[in-house]
Each structure stands twice: as C-alpha cells, then as structure tokens.
Image 1 (cartoon, rainbow, N blue to C red):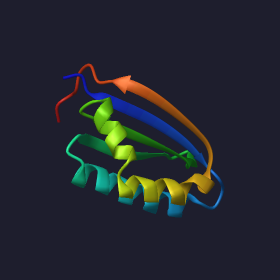
Image 2 (tube, rainbow, N blue to C red):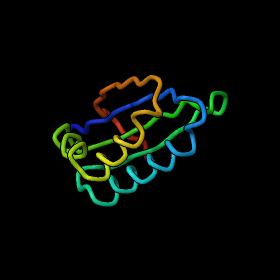
Image 3 (cartoon, one colour):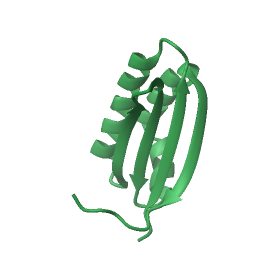
Length: 101
C-alpha cells in the first residue's frame, strides 16, 4: 500500500498562535484517535518564526484523507482557523520509506 502524506505550511496572522494551536490539536487528536486511515498527524512550529506552523499528516491513501476532510472535527478546525491564516502551502506526497523508532 502506498501511503499518502501531506506537508502543510501555515503563516499565521499575528496574535492567533495559541488559538490556532489549540484548534489544530483537537483536529490532530480527532484524526489519529477516530479515523482508521489516519496514521500520523504531527504539528510542528518554527522556533525562529513562531507564527509559522506546519502539519505532517500520513494516511493509508488519498481516500482516507478525503474522509478526514468530511469529519466533524476537521470542519470545526477549518471554520475556526481559516480567519487566522495569512498564507497556506500544501504539498501532497507519497511515503516511499518509513524510518523506525
């Protein structure tokens, strides 16, 4: 199975970091906790640019990602955070090899 991954970069509007991270955390927990096709959902922050946040998400396949976008926790996250985002870049990736911890 070829896993599907996303790398999403956000540049947040000033003053919205805490609210964005709280909403993102709920989305990540809902994704990993209740979506069988979601394998990983990491939230990362640039220490030199605190208003730059990235997501690294891994799904069984693109269909699992599309199901993710229909989930109530995603819709809540999206509605809450859309006004907080100044810019967003999405890169769609295929997982070709995974390291072991």
